[in-house]
Length: 379
Image 1 (cartoon, rainbow, N blue to C red):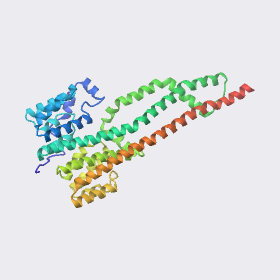
Image 2: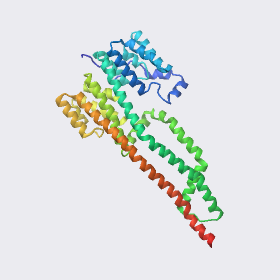
Image 3: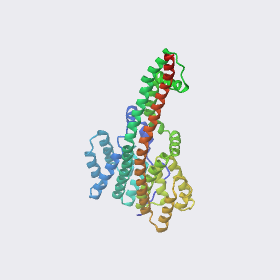
Image 4: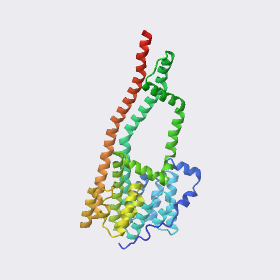
């Protein structure tokens, strides 16, 4: 497998940015609501492609068959363009590189497959990579769906009480000129704020959700957001496990293709969109260039656990990098599944407890002046 990866840190020959700039504005806005070539589509694409290549079908014929199976015109166009690029003399990796729907990681992985003669194995591994990524996302969504429904319902209940119930008590207190305790004044001020600025608050929340993707596209905001998430109790360790699972899967794939460890680290960094891990991998790459072993490079970095460092050290001594990273990926995948289920289990009672406290505080705040009112009326 005498292939080489040259100038891996330099920008690839294609210019994705210039292609995006030529995209009509309306089409760009529609893309904010979802990628037409999602990770689920990529899982299906690479899995089908590996099966067809294994069956002896040529790459051009395989792309044609996959194109015919697409229902949406936007997805069919992707494969039409890939086929036309191949007919014009471009390699498959160059054709993939010309499409903004594909990442640098996919481009380099396919390039490795072409140069090493293992394209069928690479596409199979890419299919498995996206299958695992989609499975993690599904598990997380399943774990959070019920707590989110409870949370939204709870917010609506509290807003209803502040918007409808509290003003009724407020009118009674004003008519009888009852002196209000501080907790009641606080709840009444919240009620007034909801009444006067409720629509503005709702519009601000909807606006933030709408521009969230744009904000995360800003590298400075994304970096600060990633590091902030990492400091959140439990959420930070959960996210770390998710991205380490992706990292170990990528290294396992690249090790199976006999890619040198330095190039594997750099390619994995192109795939992962999480700044704390990207920065850690950049530091690891710099140390490897200086001649240090991978285990020594990982040691001392908070992103990597002692267990991972120990297993990497064993892999280096026994020359079993692919197997060891496969085991690490399996362990991190199990950890992600367990943490997502635990997150769901913990969120439900916590949300119910918080809602109970909020409703209780509102009721207490409204009933405290009622005792004074009864005294005044009784007098």
